[in-house]
Image 1 (cartoon, rainbow, N blue to C red):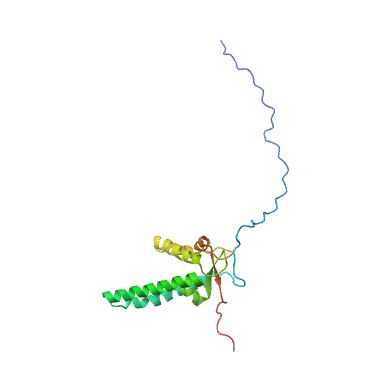
Image 2: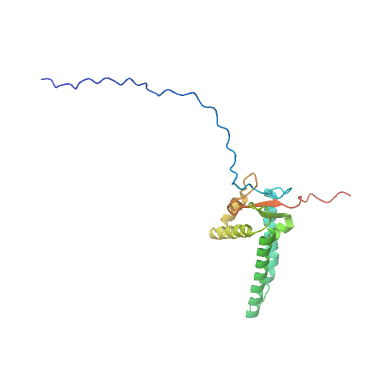
Length: 183
């Protein structure tokens, strides 16, 4: 006894691959949107190099240590603690005022760099303070490892992650020192 066979089905007459159309001409690059804010730099001031930024960081740390050294020499009685507190407040408030008004940290003034906001191209401002605050919060939360991010700069404006988040560019305000002038 044989089993019944299913009826034969004809294969569809379709090509295995769809036909390929000729490639279209490449599209012209899109023009930047008129509403996008360009990166503003003050005229004639280049973005600070890695070397200048590293020197600024070292100068800031050294100047801060020098300014805070007297706190360690104050007698540990109640009057001495108040003097230490006032001195720390004066140094910290001075640093904040420099940052917001002029875009400087203590070491920035020594090395000739300042921080300008990308939205206005002017030094200082709340963006510089927010960058400082964010940088110190991240660095403290990661036991100092977050400070390594400040060493990673990206072209074309040599910005680190904190600069880009805050909308800040670090610029050189005077040419680098190249040695004594010839006589």
